[in-house]
Image 1 (tube, rainbow, N blue to C red):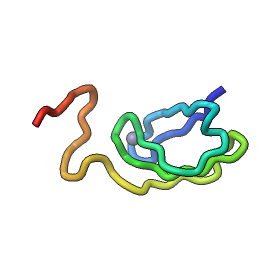
Image 2 (cartoon, protein in one colour):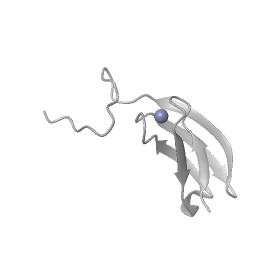
Image 3 (cartoon, rainbow, N blue to C red):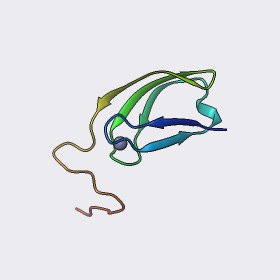
Image 4 (cartoon, rainbow, N blue to C red):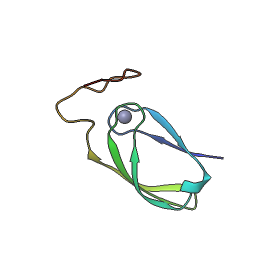
Length: 68
Ligand SMILES: [Zn+2]
């Protein structure tokens, strides 16, 4: 059983593994790269807030690498 979260920025559904049942820290959205600060206890979401956006000055690109 995982823990389901929705990204605050893009609404992307994320599922965290059991290792996150008691976790406090950062999670990066797989969709938009926004960093979320989450606090989980006993498999329940206690708090979630957005602490950073994706790569600055750049729109997130899905499935596309950006060689320099
Ligand atoms: Zn997102």
